[in-house]
Every structure is written in C-alpha cells, then in structure tokens.
Image 1 (tube, rainbow, N blue to C red):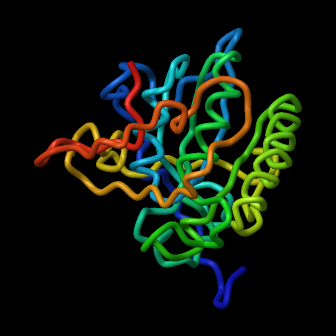
Image 2 (image 1 turned 180 degrees about the vertical axis):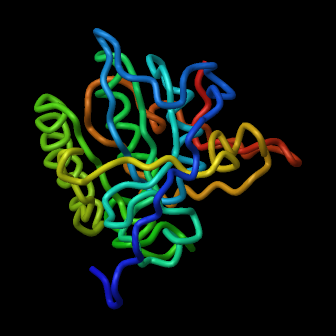
Length: 229
C-alpha cells in the first residue's frame, strides 16, 4: 500500500479523555450493551458519514477516528499524509435491529465503486471499508454486496471495491481529535461529501433513498444527505 515507509507510532492517544457525544449525549467510546453491537464504517470524509449515522434509529453512539493502518495513535495530519495506512472511520454503536439499515444506508450514502476516492477527496484515507465485529454482520455485509453489485452492474456502474475485514484483523480504532468529533453538529454549514451512486441498495427496510426528495434546500439551510423524523 505504501510507496514510502509508514510513519512511526505515537506514544499517546490524541484524545485520551473524550467528551460526551454532542448530539446523543452518550459516551463517545460506549461499549455495546446487551442487544447492541459496534460496527466500523469508512465512506470518505468522516464528518458527513458520522452525521448520517447519528440520525439513524437505534444508534446509541458515534465517533470518528482512524482504522486499518499501521501507525499507532495517528493524528489527522499524519493520516492525511497517506503514510499511516488508515482510512477515516466512523465507530457506530447501535441496537441489533438497527444494523441492517445502517449497512443499507452505508452503501447508499457513498460510492463504493470508487477506489481511494470520494468526490474531490482523494487518497487511501478516503477508501471505502467496513470492519465487522460479528459473524452475523459479516454474513449480512456479504449478502448486501452480492445484491448491490447486481444493481450497480445493471446500471452500468463499476464493481464494489470496499475493503471488508473483521475489525480484529483491521487493527485498533483510534479516536480523532476533539474538533473532528460531531463536526457537523458544531459546524452545521460545514463540508459534506456524499459522492453516492444514486442507486438504492435492495435490502429490507428503509434507507436514505427510500424517501429522497427532489426539493433543493433554499438559501444557507444546512444540507444533509438524509432527513429522518
């Protein structure tokens, strides 16, 4: 993956004492309780991915950080260099029942056929990835890849290039700096990148394309890829 040597480890975490989630009020690194699971999603710039995820029913906590690389405790700037091997990742804790919609939403909110790129964001840190934590998640992701691949192929889209690994194999999740956590709650008119294919994923339940509106937001109204009741 690297054209140059990876960066050396950092001795300490960049966010050793995270504040509570600014939207959900939960522990940023909440451990899943009975009836809950954690899953890790990388779909480009993590600001927009996290915003969508915290809106979904059943989501308990979200946090942004880095995963799938080699450097311990990387900083945002180090990851953006492409030398740590990490991808911008959102850690999602949610109820068991919410996982299928989370996976469906993940496929629909970005372009999984784009290698190391989402829109104008280019680099390995923007690569598409799912890091699963249970066998049931793995099976659901595999089934969704098969189904969505057929939809994309019929629409003349490319092949899915999403990296799919058990979280244990991908390596630790490292929290990003505080200013990146719930960035779009703190900066509601901030940058969002959702370079989606526009094709719905044929999984049961609703996703962001189920009730897509053709109306464009007026003025400087904050724009979100999905709006949930």
